[in-house]
Amino acid sequence: MALRGTFGALALVVACILPTGVVSLWPIPTALETGTTPLTLAPYFNFEVAVPGAPADLIEAVAQAKYYLETDKLGRLVVGRGSNDTLALKGAKSLSSLKLALTEGAKVDSISAESVKPLGTRSEEYILTIPEDGSPATLTANSTLGLYRGLTTFGQLWYYYGGETYTLTSPIDITDAPAYPFRGFALDTSRNFFPITDLTRTLDAMSWVKINTFHWHITDSQSFPLMVAQYPELAINGAYSAEEMYSESDVQYIVAYAAARGIDVLLEIDTPGHTAIIGTTYPDYVACFDASPWATYANEPPAGQLRFALPEVMNFTASLLSSVAKTLPSYYFSTGGDELNTNCYTDDYPTQQQLNATGWTLNDALNIFTETTHGALIAEGKTPIVWEEMVLDWNLTLSNETIVMVWISSEDAAAVAEKGYRIVQAPSNYFYLDCGAGEWLGDDPTGNSWCDPFKTWSEAYTFDPLANLTEAQYELVLGGEQLLWAEQSGPQNLDPIVWPRAASSAEIFWSAQQPGGAPLNVTEALPRLQDIRYRMVQRGLNPIQLQPQWCALRPDACDLYA
Figure 1: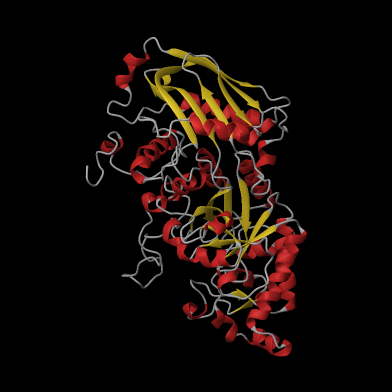
Figure 2: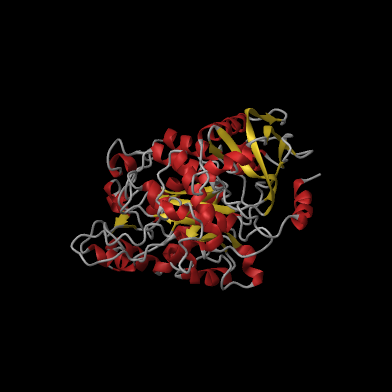
């Protein structure tokens, strides 16, 4: 029987209210039923992989899950951290194994291959059953990717005290599937450089909360750290140093590391704006390069944008994008397109000369540039992704398959949907993790960040992906992501500025609602987010504290009106 058929039937009979005391799961499953019987993990607990020809990355995922079971050692977030559970655990049954299996007739493919399939075709659903009598637990899915998601959930169910790994809520029946196919996190590695170890640690954390897309904003006006074989000078001249580059092998390593953890890498090379650094290698290709005052020509320093009206720049950009895209397994590639400053072109002689010679408007030139660059990507089998200005501020002929990221305001989603484009929700007024850190520009002591205030996890968690859309437009929403622009971030503060806040959107776009259909709400969510935050600490991450520990050990005691 196919898992989807089983899913529908089981969802109708599970408890409609989140069981009291189940605070360990993030994101919350679609359907969840638990009991009140203590159950321990046997010292000899093992995973039985009943998958013929199990791929290597599934075996590695099982080994990772076993490692977390042995090393998490997370005490329950209650006063005493589990010391009062010892009496209940006396005489408790022990779970000796978890059997992993695919549904009958399911194709056996690697997690990595499943993770980079087109959106809407990835099978991430699973069923997890843990009996109370110690008999083997079972995890069933339609794909190895679904098994991976189920392993992630299984690892969150267990606590540790006094040498015992246990749960107090068996039997446990979970049927789970994502509400949206795109669940992302975006990181800018141009303003400041992040070593590979920081990226892999971030990918690990993303996988713990079932985020499935790493949106890698790898270049910008400040630096070009990406080594491209066909254009090596871009990184040689554009990276901060030889040690602050991503080689082709580095990128392939990140892509493979991510895919094995259920994550697709969406690379972005923003064009034609945010490209000043290309002028260090190709000065004739960039208008208003390092012009002053920069604020006349750019949203932030340094000024400089591609002279997209020039045929040689169109051809160069198309070649650059396609030469990178062809090395990546993802079906998607972002060409950016945000924050184009028209003053830069009004004052640029080569651009004006070209417009006058052809009779084009600036919009005409941008349309031809976009058709050229997107055409090159489509020829490589990629679907272009753009920022919202490309459909709201300009009159361009884009492929109907183009995906639009809404970022300026959540209110803009309706206008994008009205044009019929698929949407990724990334609104700065909910999801920008860099907001609220104060002004980073010099000589502005009273300035604040442009997107103040700080976006708390709870504010982000209140975001409604379908707000202001008609029911007919709901299907255009692919999902969403939280983002970190790195003007004031680097390896030193990556973990605390991202985590656990980035888990907020992970649950919005995986769960969409509580089991049984109740809306997500911050009061119910906070104890569970605390739990995943403390588990992240056990796994070596450095997430920010959400509250004093006194509050974390006393759910709801620190609510505003408690």
